[in-house]
Image 1 (cartoon, rainbow over the protein chains, first blue to last red):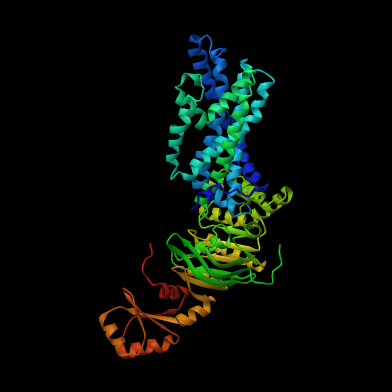
Image 2 (cartoon, rainbow over the protein chains, first blue to last red):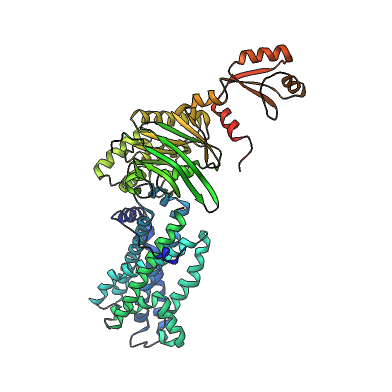
Length: 263
Length: 306
């Protein structure tokens, strides 16, 4: 099979929103359970590392340590929300609940189902990021009005991680193998994307690698510019990287899923 | 609703492969409007594959397959809009209640909210699940789940209903209730295609049916005629013992030997049993009506498939 068959543009309609609505309805029925965990983990990091460890660090790139990691915590909450929604969440709906099978018996196509799932994943990122932004703002760690841009931006970066997650879901032989990308990709990204220390501390070659293959690097850079209120032309480059990666991974994930489910 | 004078489904030389395995090998059939059409066959015969091609979720590889006069590979949305599906495996949404399952499903068909509410309530009444309205689906019994799936398949007022083993694992009460619902739908001019392993179910429900094996259609016709053609009216059974076989071999009677019995397919059961009593002095002779099951086993053999 030719490689181009993995990059065929999906044909979509407004019906992708029906899948988004389905997931939103489920989310709303268990709202309280859904909102607490995403709030808790960034708060723990902010306190333990920001206020705890941070007391030994006076100044890092011109800001206090907690100010340095606050934008990273926003970025990480986006990453976790959509990545896990479109890996474990989507896998359960696809394989155990047969939700996708049920939906494609209606006028919806599998392309629309997968796209709807990823749009929902991006929405989860927006919800989580918004909550963390509120906390960070209350702690006085975000500049306004720049930080308001984080909300729409979280949808874009959430979509990127949703597509990435969906690619792994499409090739995962069972649900347990999904822990591999979580441990081997997401966790290193959590640590080495300029989150807890500046990228410049890494050896040159690893810096290049972080820019080349770790999406979180670009997302952290943009959010940090927004929370500190120091905009830079380089953000444009970051954004182009994110948009291009999203587009490629979006098309790839839909085609991979189609190959897995339509036989 | 769309008006059709032409057949609802036309298949010609339809083919589907999974790698090396040919799941459906050049089958042809037509299903007319408001007919109940059955697919029978052992496990792995290709029935479900054929169903999945008809409902546009598994593309055909070769041959022609048209539903409502449209090609299944190019007009999926238009076809699926007017089809209702009861899949073999229950796939109700465990995240929702009974009512929500139907309501959310109706949204996939673009049914307006107000209309959908009315329709969902009347469908719940139709399958006698009004009292379970607010129950999560995993709390339902097997029979209730099947009824709810039937209701879900009807949410878009389909003109073609596809039932893949609709009564599998149900108790006789639940099965008979479903049968009555299916016959009721037929009266409302819904065309129904079904697969089943219960041959009395096929005989009771189907106007016409095919028996498939190894991806091919072995016979096609209405259940009574198929039985008459391949078996006759009755089956005479005697014990399988050496004296029985040696006596039968002296007569011109055709028989089939099974492990413990010998079966004779006939249209004159009285003649045969009289002759056997006289000529062979058998004491134990059973005469029963021939059934679809006899045809099925005669054509597809008695060997286990899986």
